[in-house]
Length: 357
Ligand code: F6R
Image 1 (cartoon, rainbow, N blue to C red):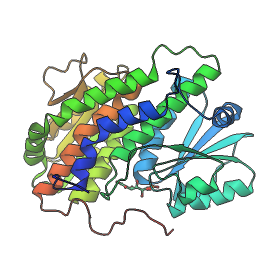
Image 2 (cartoon, rainbow, N blue to C red):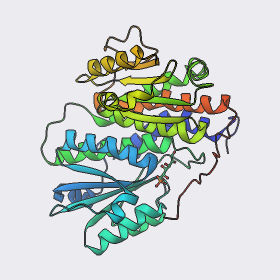
Image 3 (cartoon, rainbow, N blue to C red):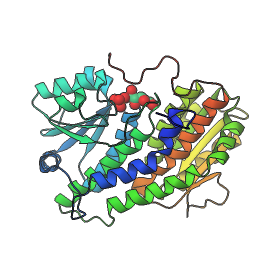
């Protein structure tokens, strides 16, 4: 039920702080320690390489998951598009672990890979919002994202829930390996939830930005580096699918290698810079597009020369920034679609779960 909300998508965007807090509760035991099935912990520890398999928004969460697992737990990770992996399997490591990320747990492309790698005898784990789903039943292990039913076709809360669970898994694995972690993941998820809340109060501003930047444009670019690049991929997918604006998420440094030719007077370019090591580079990339006439919308984090930026996210641990930076992106996509008269919850040509190859 969407209650007083005009759309499920808006309701689901606004539910995200609650989802974070729900995940914190569900993944804690009575002693306030992280609750994780011993077999899952062992499966991750035994892996010499993790292969994340997913589609669409879940793939975008998998890109963030790769950064988290590698940086926190020091295990190499490859994130693959399910439909590509299915017919072009790379050379695998000796002891791979396959992690399937799927909101619905019914995506046929991902299931195809699951069937194949099970046949090869590999260990499988599904991270899903629907525990009884096909991918959940057929994988050896399941982790639940506890986001509650997601009805809008455009995925929002499932994405942040998947990232939160991947963060918990990364930290638990790191601890089991004896890697020192200087933050408490549950506390970080709580901080992210509070930071999300701030944007729930800024909807009017975000709506105005959607109006200013996206009411009439035929296209839009999102640029970021590292973690921010992954969020830009998700931001552009959100905008495309519900507003039908042609959008691209791009690595900031790559734009000048060809695609910058598309920048014209007034082309909206959203820049995202929340990562200490690359935020200045990204600002440089924004200057390059502005010099070609782009209409810049800069999003950054507190403490990163943010004075002139349109949107500033509160300071959070760098590895947790996607949980927060994606929120204004989701709102902007939502309002852009609304202003352009699109059917937000049921965009054309799309189904909520894609059960055919
Ligand atoms: C985008 C979207 C899709 C799904 C994709 C995978 O908003 O919803 O891109 O993310 O079809 O679906 P799941 O996660 O159910 O496997």
